[in-house]
Amino acid sequence: MAEDGDRSKPSARTSDRAERGERGGARPAKGAWSGGKGGPKGPARGNPGAPRPAPWRQGPGGDGALWLFGLHAVRDALANPKRKKTRLILTPNAAVRLGEDVIEAAGLAPESADPRRFHAPLDPQSVHQGAALEVLPLDWGSLEEVCAPRGERDVVVLLDRVTDPHNVGAVLRSAEVFGARAVVAPARHAAPETGALAKTASGALERQPYLRVKNLSSAMETLRGMGYALLGLDGEGETTIDAALAARPGPVALALGAEGPGLRPKTRETCDALVRIDSAADFGSLNVSNAAAVSLYAATRPR
Image 1 (tube, one colour):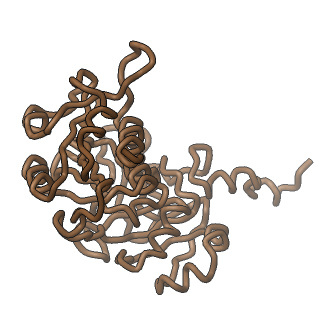
Image 2 (spheres, rainbow, N blue to C red):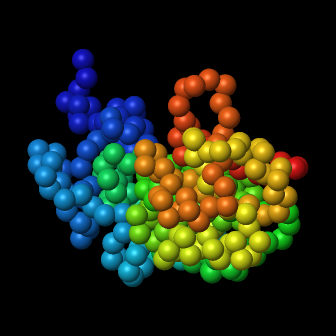
């Protein structure tokens, strides 16, 4: 039988799950986020109509500051000299896993956090692994600067109103793997930089340009003027992507639409051709992140 003094001690399993940010970990007090001094209030568990915290907010970093979370996303952001960093919150275990050299090189003194009361203003369901970093969005420069062609197999990915951060994060990861010049999306009706996007991108957000433009069709015309062929992915496309690429040996921009609505009419009209990915059966279509990976593989192979 346990002594009274032992009853108040959390089990190692509970503490470990709390640090990973899993649902089974300790929850913040009812009616508030997890205890950060002066932190924003969140919805009480019993009040689903209460507002949730926005991924963009005014903070020490100024307008547009956002929180990245998870060891991989935080480590890569800390190591990125182009990323402005304003606040770092770590549990003792996360600090050990990140490494003293990585933390010191970033020049930002971390705040220590109790894994059971992690006080970064994150959604309680965020799998933060005991690490959160407040940053400002990256500034990659202009479309013309970033996408200036360097070779015949240069490729750019265009996302037409793809709003799901997990899909965009996965596209960024594939774009980095296949060496895309940039992922381009409209400034409105597209996923902004968020912690969820960065975590899904698994570090690619720090290295793969993600450009937000005022008008996607205008950006496509700019790319055309730079020598890019514009191919729109469509399940009913008149030709296969392999055939279209074989006929166009130069740089290519691949346009993908949101799941369901697909490419908007204006985007379709601006494309040089609508192409499809051949499938082995009449099953349907790939989701946008998988379609992007297949298309990038096709576009970067020798033609």
